[in-house]
Image 1: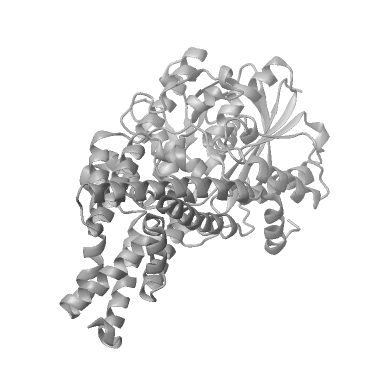
Image 2 (image 1 turned 135 degrees about the horizontal axis):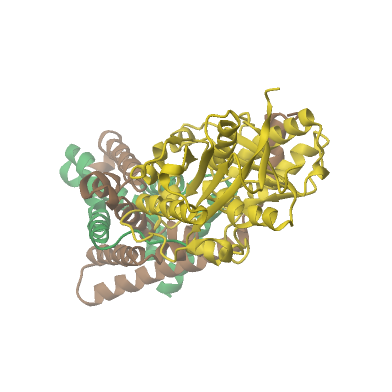
Length: 332
Length: 118
Length: 149
């Protein structure tokens, strides 16, 4: 009861879409995006407008793929990294859909799916449209420095993905299916370095996974893969070590932050990050593999670093969070 | 010869900055600020002028040179204007570099949108 | 979690890859040294065309600032800095880049509320603490050192 929410009836992820920027297009998953824009401004005047435009393109793609109208959507849930989640809010301001803005930093995709699945499970809505987006430039200018400022990135730094993704959850329909979900607890082991997000978020990922395995009785090997959102190389190493101390050996772990770019040739230091990272990898890589039958049972867990530029400057440590979604290819 | 002295001295000061970036967790802003203050102090103690005499631009172009310029400006202003020079010397000495940055920054802002990075 | 903050801090240190210090320093040396050499060349150039020594130094600085502004505007300065690290940070060109890049970046928020307000968001502390240090030096010169007057 309580911690792990077992859905009365598995919720179907019927459709999904993702849009990426130039660098994402050059990465290993480039050809699996629905839209790649060579122009990171997406034809707009500012980076914030660009991110909203990117989300809109993803939104209209998923409508087209599912052949529905905005009015058919019962609720839209989503988040991004901009102050006051404006990218997402501005995406829906001209579109008549009920909207819940969520902030969970880079955990936005999993957070919106956990809530969406619960809303459908409660019987209140028939579908929920989940989204997540991030833009390298909006994140950089808000959390770090201007784009043209000459700084050297530290080896633990991660590259914010320019990408937006949507996933449509429905009560009825073809799979993959969400069977269980779990809200994460905040974990903070005192990391203050805003250039080492993986290290800040790994404890949250470990906390959620450990709790899930303990309470559910499941084992690591019961899953084809366990995906984390954007821990990068440093965070991945730390997650494995943390779980080792809890006697869990994470043998089939994959991190979206290490899948979306080629770390060496694309020079992204420790890997990728951003709400769009887990969202785009989910839509371009994980869900297609479940649909094709290459994967049967997975855990998808996006992690978020709940910091702001202000808290960093005030020398606060970085709280992390990780929400978990269990996804299966066929109903059991 | 002047060029070699400038190259080596300037290069070494940058290496010092790089070591601070890599081995301490100092942010670039902290390093630049420390360098400027260090420049004022070194110049006040009379330690920087010999390096300027040796390396020219190698000692003036790095941001420590900015501190040196400030200290020299204060010296001249206090000598010439007395008490009021304490308040005018610094800004007068750095006016050229700061004003040029400001003007070029404004022009760049008018002409160009921020560039995308890949 | 069985790990405490102190143990975790040690784990993080072990897991975080170190910077390539040698390679970074070499690049900083070469590019930083080259910018200073260019500064020296500009100084000689301005002196040759008739500027007095102090003005030639100033003209060299202003030229370097201008060059950095152009490279920043074209998006090349950050690319160079990716390699050069402190080599592009420490010279006066780095100061110019720190003024020009926010001026461009925050243009989207308006010429006054964006560019005007945020132009010195990075370089500000350099001016603030440089000037403060010089004022302290001035006070010492005026009140303590007899050489000041």
